[in-house]
Picture: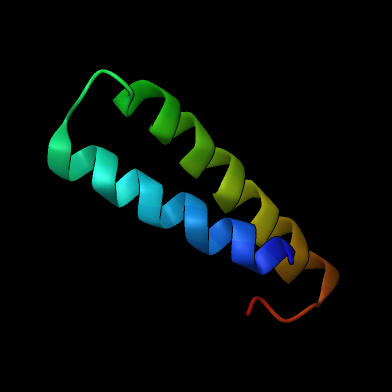
Length: 49
């Protein structure tokens, strides 16, 4: 489930970059959270997807 959330956040971030709307800042914050989650999973030795 966590990997699904990460994928959704990355897709939303890409949409934010493409459209460059006012929500772009929020999308970038969500991307940073997604990257942190992936790094924590990698450090703990779990599979990403």
